[in-house]
Length: 375
Ligand SMILES: *Cc1c(COP(=O)(O)O)cnc(C)c1O
Image (cartoon, rainbow, N blue to C red):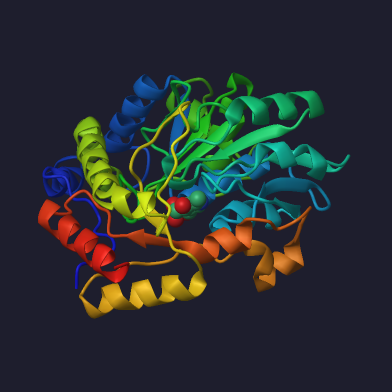
């Protein structure tokens, strides 16, 4: 069976892990490999970053930094992964779900203002498939209403909006290095702090509420418990696995884009015949080929396509079940306004195999099956 995803392995991954264990004798967090990864991100993104144990945890850190309290409201799309909501619901926030745009599957920026109340604390845009949300509009709304903008850029590393890296545009951002993402350390993430006044507290929250980071820089002579926090720093072995991928980040991105464009060109004729819809990339956005999806006519047709591909040894998968329709979604959140596209568009979407090591001949085989199915 052709898998839907295969975690990326960069050649030096094992050697670096061995180096962490045998040479550095350093397995816990914030050792030399974490420092090298962080340096790479800081140089490239031009904001302060901290490696974390997951994107979920990076989002949880933003929830603490924004001082989310029971009764506060946070606005986000319902078409997203559970972590986006979990990070705020865990602090007692009420989640306000807003409809998505049909073209990008991102939050519809024109509907956000309608969901704002005096209890609203933050807007959380999710850059679906590594395609940027309409950030200028979102940041403008946030500014006028004095709200935080927290970017769930889990899928967005290397992608840009108007030339700015996703995750660096709002107040805070979060990347994921889960094995399903473009760059991986198994489980892991990155916290992006785009406002200097939050850097110190970010370090404290990440290190169990201690000023350990300051201590290691020699800024205080002992470290102690100064705030709430948790343990959000990943092991050196995970960082060692990630580093070689960063060293070839451009190459990985280009290869994925090449595969994505190949899918697009192969399947364009089906879109021209109005059999399927293909992804749309706004001109403000450069994406990172995180996923390749197509949309069928309806749920029934999608089920049949997934089945047909599986019968021919290809694993294709649908994506999020809208959060507002889930058990916890009903408990911790509510949909504001009309669900015009969230449910109907998510029902039509199917993702095709997409990963760095995907062979061109396999990709063409998948496209051939899709074309036969629609004949
Ligand atoms: C993958 C993903 C997450 C969660 O990432 P973890 O690193 O597994 O915590 C959150 N949000 C979105 C949109 C994702 O795709």
